[in-house]
Image (cartoon, rainbow, N blue to C red):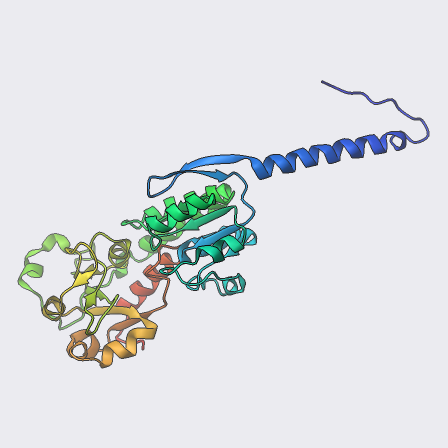
Length: 334
């Protein structure tokens, strides 16, 4: 319906200003109420159907990956809580922490009065059930086995926090970065170091050779080490994809899960070892790891935590860094 207001020849608007302002305020109030109460329904990565606010205003993140992606999407203004492990970007430290992940404090979460909680892989069903019982919507966005699933997680989080367009733009930018990275390094794919002995399997696996006819270097990623056991990323992980995209071959690609035997590590004797920078010195000084060729020849690559072990946009930085390190002369990062 079209409304035509009478015209005052002296001041056309003034007599009706209170009416117009009142009408505008009424619309704003209705709009604000609708924004606060409108809900959406999503199915999370655990198969749970969750009613979530269409425009959340107070979000608690229980995952370092979720926190990092929210910042990448420009959604940090609605982030009111995080865990002790959510430390990237550095400004995230200013957000109140609810503590650790393995021993989540439900009361601390609820004290922040969130209208949405987003969790990750480390939060189990028990916690989600407790949050459901409290009436606070929790959506689980977990890390997936394949690198490409990162794009899906960004889209999912973008939808949850009202940043769908930003998520599409970020994904498009990341696709371009990956394509450019792989295209620009076609002629410089890392190869096994000179003098590295070839196994019988490697000698026979011509199909394993890269486009520049070089056999990819053998790579081992250190998740855990020492008396408690050896742990790495198997073939069913996005970390395996990162190693492959960086031009290497994960010696644990045939393993499902995270456990790896010391005997297999010594027998494979990888060309390069990737380890968190803060763990590099301890690993290199400990027996029998200090007898491995990669340690003795200065081919241990210390990597920044979070760039490689979390499914986040910085994974692309990890691919670039590993390609550069495996394509240059040995230099140990400790």
